[in-house]
Length: 339
Ligand code: TYM
Image (cartoon, rainbow, N blue to C red; front, side, top):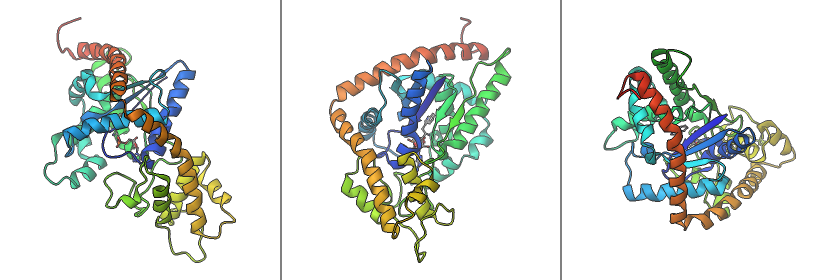
């Protein structure tokens, strides 16, 4: 079993990233270890340059993200953790795969539409091409499983199509590329903004009050949750119900923190007097979950030399695997000399 996922070194990582993705990375590392597989995690700096960004900040955020992933439980001795730009095989594969990627499929990507709408100066071709690089990330390692949040479902579908089209076109016998499966969690796959529960929690939200950052202090977490939008039902109804967006989001967060279902989380609050009790329960659970991550992060982030070494060693391991795939892909496509 081989697991791969990628995370962007942009903005400050938030509770949605943690519950939808980072926690599943740690679980994947554990399962891969038990089954003699491999878990590979990539900080995708080349994806981050597809929107407006500051070069010095990109480097800082890359270290922030590395420290955060380790603080959350990724262990560079038990998984491969690296920076995307250190593995040129991935960018080469991106170009090679462009020949089996349908322009029309890229045109239909929700994420491209959403992100291009908020770009003020330039909608880069890189933003349009983003899903092809994402496909190359995973396909270079012939991974079977990709832990992601719900918003990545369409990108995973596209990478599956690309792998299948490549195999149909270039693999005479069997398959060269592995068609991966997404692994989207049942609970916490789409955490919504606390101020606007119709939009997903993100770093680009209109107000910071709707986003819980992983490094927020407990008082900040408490304040943001206290002000979370619920509804005006009187008496208050604590139930997981699509018509109750704010309340359902809080139940989803609570359930994800406690590894139970949202209905079970609602049942635990049967004696609650109102939404205040629900918010307090969510605050306690989130603070308990994130405090150790924040504390470990603070110990790790200062030592950039150590973080750099971890990333470079991860890249060496990653390149060994990707190089084998690339040799086969080039050969099958008739690119370069016969080897
Ligand atoms: P990024 O950094 O934007 O997001 C990282 C992960 O966090 C998940 N996520 C959420 N989950 C639940 N609720 C939310 N509100 C929420 N917001 C974000 C995302 O689904 C993602 O899993 N395109 C990828 C990066 C990438 C990648 C890859 C992923 C590049 N190459 C290869 C998998 C495999 C992304 O969105 O990163």
